[in-house]
Image: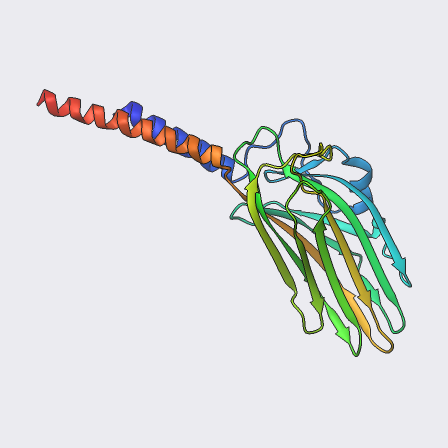
Length: 251
């Protein structure tokens, strides 16, 4: 009886730890708080962890337009404790964000990789959500954020937000897969290589502003982990049943 209860408790505990994102990869550092996108580009080619995920190879931040929030002005804030297996980050470009006045336009873009941390097999990515915040537009000004996957062997998705009159949030779901945790992405191996574009235009007589952009990735236990859990619980059930039958025979 005690043996069965111990086995059941142990399996449930380890599973809950894995799904809550508490099994980090020992070789990859935790992503820092309040550092610029330029800092991430220069220091985390090999990646850093947010929850059970590894974000790596932030690169090619490029801005065109009348005003320039450079990569050194964009602050990246990790979001590791959102619950429900959701992990991500927030971008904020100084105090004014991405802003364009009348006759101006700003277009900023960059790309990165996201995957599951090695050492945590209980991780598969099954969706992404894009949110733009602090959005204001006047007259004929417009604001938009778009994202798609550059990797040809990964899931095909294209999500976007638009103002005025559009949505501030968009998401995409795809079959859960344990994607590679770095930018190697061998040919034919599924991986996630998101490309993000942030655009504001004041039009002829308006203004447009985006203060923050959030990227949130949904994770779920991969099928192999669920099977392992089911097998362990089934075995614990058999042990418990045999023990109970043995006790009945002794009476």
